[in-house]
Length: 127
Picture 1 (cartoon, rainbow, N blue to C red):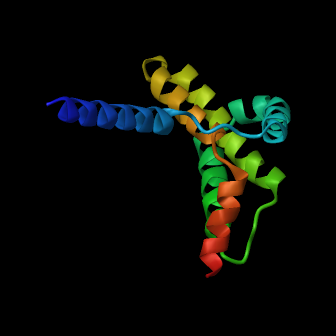
Picture 2 (picture 1 turned 45 degrees about the horizontal axis):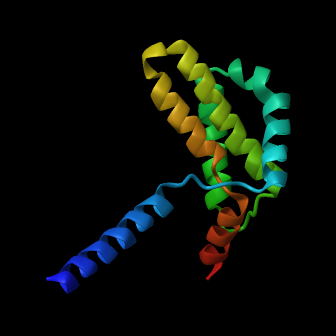
Picture 3 (picture 1 turned 45 degrees about the vertical axis):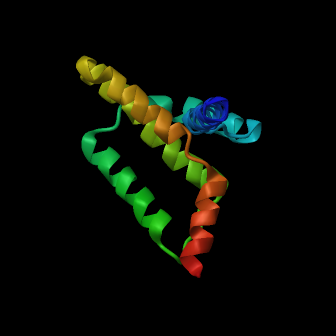
């Protein structure tokens, strides 16, 4: 019986630690965060005044360039797209106050996009 309790306790610890590890938000390097901040500050007014048509054009341009196997975005280009898409969530939160939580979640998702993961994706695309 004691052995069964010990096994149960160990399994409980393993699963709880595993859940905690997966629940953590991905952190960007300090350099990437500084780059994001500078892009955010320089583009905030412009992006907040985007029409839906301009945003759609930006969004589709990003995905077309990201998925094109012949194009690899630079770090600045990559973060320029992701930060502008994230910034547009601020506009949506302002326009639709009942959707603030969704907009905040969406913004956080776009700001957590990682350039190194993008490079890994591009490398796997070439194989």
